[in-house]
Structure formats: C-alpha cells, structure tokens
Length: 163
Image 1 (cartoon, rainbow, N blue to C red):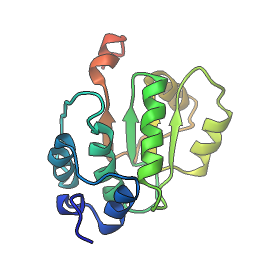
Image 2 (cartoon, rainbow, N blue to C red):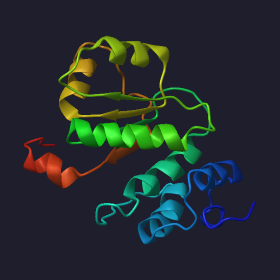
Image 3 (cartoon, one colour):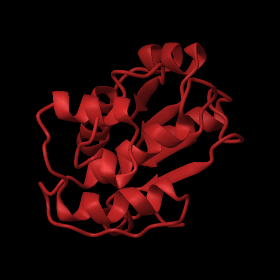
C-alpha cells in the first residue's frame, strides 16, 4: 500500500489504520516529525492546537514499539483532560497492534489504574502527581522506558511541575 503516511516511513499496517480513521494527508507537523521519531532522534515540536501533534509522535512511537512487552513509553501531560485525549488517540492508533495503553491521573480512585498497570502495559499517559504516587507505592517502574514524551511542557512548568 502506497499512502502519504507510508511514504513517511510508517508500516503498511499502521498507514492502513490511519487511513481507516479518515486521515488522507499528513499535516506539516506530522510530515516533519514522523521521520525524525522513526529514526530514533530526539525531537522538540511546536504547532497550534488541532494540527495533529499527537499523531505526529504517537504513530512513529507505536511503530517503534512493535509488539507488546513492558512499559517502554511514558507520556507526561499537565492535566487529566490532556492525558485522556492522548490516551484515547494512542488507543485508536494502536487498534491494529497488540500494544497495551493506559492512563493514570489524579482525582479518581486507584482501582482501574492498578488493574491496568498490573495487567502489563507498553504505553502510559500520566499526569506527574499521580505517576509519582504510583511510583512511590511500587505500582509502576520506569526501568524499561525508552521513549519519554513531555507534552505541553510549558504548561507543566507554568503549573509548578519543576524538573
């Protein structure tokens, strides 16, 4: 299959999944970011809301991870709403894979989050506070994380999450 997304280096299966979701042409941020992330290089990207930034990092990450294993990708988000959006996007994009995606954020109970973490995940979207809680309780280990995404890092700093 020769699509605009496969020409960026995405596998046919992933390009097909993207096409099934209604995406035809990559946005400028996607066209620039996807090959960089696929090559394994670090990337700092900036684009307006609604330009497909999440797909720009999610699609190549899903391809790089390949198959289910251990927690290898952590995406930090400043708010629960953003974490939910990113987790939903990863769920949709990874539909045709065996990768497991989950989310941890504050303001809700630990039950479902613990269940998901103990069930084995590959990709975790998290807010900093709840991630720290789970780490302190021994519920999650970052030992195998190869890919770290700091999404909306300017907002995290504005909110007081300091390095």
